[in-house]
Length: 290
Image (cartoon, rainbow, N blue to C red; front, side):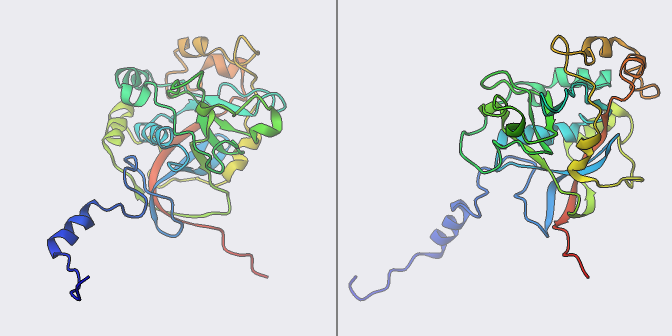
């Protein structure tokens, strides 16, 4: 240079500030923030089930499309009285599968809203640690090929690769969320309100979860240890027939759920009672004191 300092006008600096990528969140999907322990995280999911309560973190860094669909399903009330109808013997298949709503109005809502029920694109095929391992407590989708994921989901009762080398290797099999360990300290601040949660209130006529989470006990991924093994789905096993399940009017009535077909044929069947997305402070368990 000729002895003069190069000067960038303030207006140019301001323009650069507006467009310059910040913190790696540029282009992040809606509805969630990067997970940072010790801060308010919008996309902590609190769930209760017949086997106990737990918290889930959607992993947008592993699977932005799949995790966003998981968030949208939670917000819309998908997990309300959601039966785990496919739970094969653990030694043959480590999943607990679900996806058939007990609420006719919600099934109609799904069918009418492809943005939360239609096929979603496969997530980018990058080698991010964890997403292909499908550990105990991870959530994913029951896909059948490229770009085939919808809203039929599974949760892993054990690591896939310890059970079968044929599971978990495809792009549509990747994990999209993980259950927090029971030792994590989670302080719920407030529910997350979105247009989908407003639709949920209309569909169910009430909040599908207790206002103050009465009776909620966090057991972490251990809720999966006691999910009844009702068998593989037909025709591959002797588990519940989803067609007969939905045809049973007592299945669709909240007062008689899970219904005659399940209680008589599969009396130990397990289900999600509800899931909701909350703002919460999340910290690891404090060190043990002597």
